[in-house]
Length: 323
Image 1 (cartoon, rainbow, N blue to C red):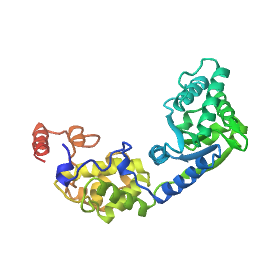
Image 2: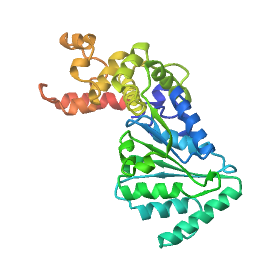
Image 3: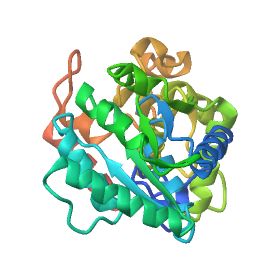
Image 4: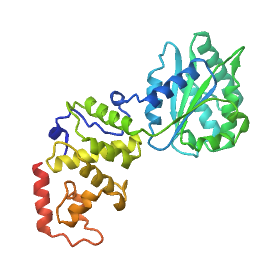
């Protein structure tokens, strides 16, 4: 089932895919962009953007890449997908991304090629910048020493190459594998979780970009979503997406606190003790709250629940198909 028709939306508002049009320029993301762009514009060498899982680092990295005009920057984005990469692989990849056509196998020859390419970029009046996403995966001293060597490529009074590392907070510890590199960090910015006001603005923005003409979450629902997600954008997306689905299944046109808390509990974001007294009271009175009859709960009764009959399964499937 797709809830888009139920809510008259043009596309999914809370996908975790990095869709450019859904980018929300929060106060802290705006501050991070301002500082990181200053670092690359003035060729400071090495800048860091750290944050917890789901804080929006990847989205910010892509946004930053999009905001570096080709006429002014020779820019590239590398995403590190595992910790087993070698310094030689990384050096070749950086060279390729910056326009070295056939990187040499010999390291000295490759460094010479890269230096010549960076001088070409400099002579064109452009700045060479490499953004590294998931930089906490860089976990060897050899790699850190390689970055330090690349930052030494310069012409009088200016560096030829700048890096921006995006990663989890443990990135700080990785840099200490090479203390001289850690000392070269020119700028560091940490993305913090949203406060409740920013969470509400974020939800409204995503809904508006998806074509909604009204706010689909009550004030109490927003408060519950903020508490359950702890202001983490990725968790807000996942939670709100589940809430819209559950609301559509229940034929509700607004998401209330009950739906949010139930969805959060099903996702493991809330402990049973955190569920509001109103929901527990409904259960004790034998009143089923909207969103409690999901397929996962019906087909897997779980500890302390009676077995589910086939009639109940058939009834749910009939209802599911009619939504």
